[in-house]
Image (cartoon, rainbow, N blue to C red; front, side, top):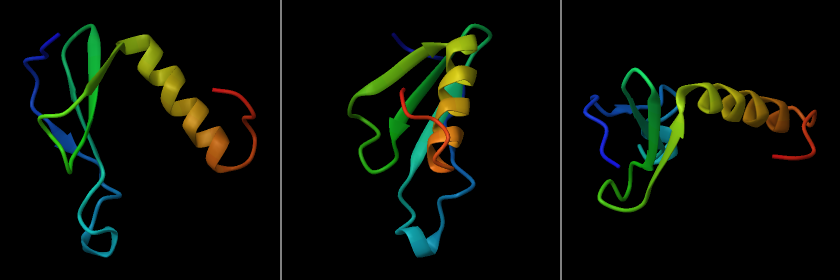
Length: 69
């Protein structure tokens, strides 16, 4: 499923990280996620609301708060 939005690289992706990270693109109802190292590879597409939940779970996991995804 293609998204017509512009791909944006994470602000956490920088020279010290090998300039490789995730990229996202969005439209009014969906958000797509891909690996910046393989932009023609697999893309994960989520409803916009589910993307917010996904990000919150990742933030909690990074701080040892979330045990499940």
